[in-house]
View 1 (spheres, protein in one colour):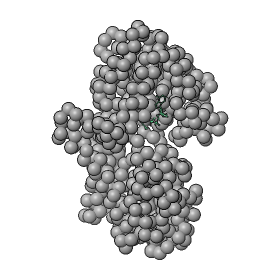
View 2 (cartoon, protein in one colour):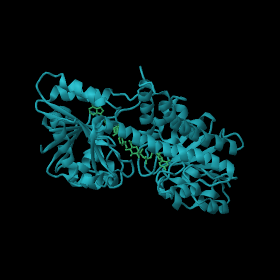
View 3 (cartoon, helix red, strand yellow):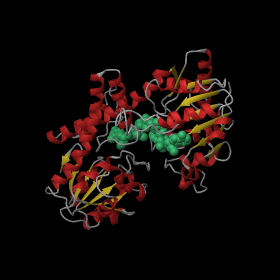
View 4 (cartoon, protein in one colour):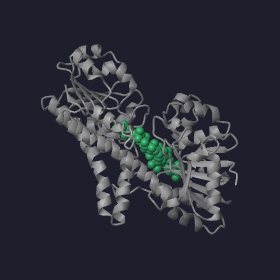
Length: 466
Ligand code: NAD
Ligand code: UGA
């Protein structure tokens, strides 16, 4: 079966970049990305490519090449579903905030709505692809909804989880470590798998396209994120021990990473992992394990989250303790708000929790981030409901220039590893700060020896204070 027309429901951080790359690499396929969020679709259609709703290095070039040729962004969901032979579901699957599984399980209401809409609109056979990250066995629920329409339309369900990381999404999509496709072991199921394999084969080497059964594919996605997050929590646990014992976490990471069995990637100690998925996916995994009665499995993975919470808390506690046990009325500058560099995404960013802890101590915070906009930062804080939005705006200010943000400040906290922070005139910054001037490097990116020479009192995650 040759696919000519693709629809992707959800024009977010995954749907947008993923389908833009499919369109770029498959000019013979029409790709329509639809979303109910009108302003998001308008931004994807904006002539000015700097206004795309997702900031990703290289994304503007891909959109420029394919948009209007075979890549389209639209709010007409029904029409795109009707015309497509293959439909990707790439909507959000956040942690449930209500009812059974509240705070743990994935909220599948958006997925179910998509399935119902596809069932209602479809007049011809379609392949439905789960692109969103989903609990294992979700495909059977989607199948159930689709198969009970009574209109004779045949559906095949595939699982094709996305492994891109934000900030490197285009690179990851163009040259993935692997593409995973799960489907039914029936003749029709295998045909559907082959149709999707053929799409990726336009640019991904065949040996990197892995096919499995549906449940293995769904569970592999949660497993991959759990293993990645576990590495960060493992190295962060050791970072605290390093600070107590005089060892240096970067040296330890290098020493263990050279062991081929361990590997050197994902061993960077930090103020804690953020991002929309690690926490939500592990909580979901814990919930699934509990549902099957696997208490030890659930407890084991929950520890990854608890360690991450501890790391964020210990970072803000350290700031308070070092600043003579009070930050009330003191200016603290945040360099970085995004959950990692090269993205404007702030979901679950460690900066939010650290800021909240310090604001509760009545600190005055000044934030500079190269890509995150003011409204986003206030929305992140307001969402916590720790204080009124007026209080948040009163205590925390946003600056568009790092030098202004650090003027008369008592301490600088590095919350994101943006490269530009390494290029600043740190003498100039030191000179206009309150003395003693402190730096708390939560990302381990600055040269502490150099900063010490300038006069800063430095703390670096995993190597303590100097
Ligand atoms: P997102 O919130 O950025 O985008 C989801 C979009 O879906 C939103 O724009 C929303 O308006 C739209 N939507 C929701 N319901 C809809 C409906 N019924 N019809 C049309 N549009 C609808 O989310 P995201 O970051 O792109 O993540 C999507 C999925 O991909 C999640 O399951 C996530 O776990 C997974 N994932 C995310 C990443 C990542 O880096 N962000 C990576 C891999 C996998
Ligand atoms: C992660 C995975 O890497 C992707 O494979 C997956 O597709 C995605 O989640 C998802 O499912 O959403 P992402 O969250 O975009 O991608 O970014 P990462 O590079 O994984 O970083 C996550 C967090 O961990 C960031 O806050 C980052 O700063 C932190 N991190 C990462 C560390 O603190 N240390 C490290 O060594 C690596």
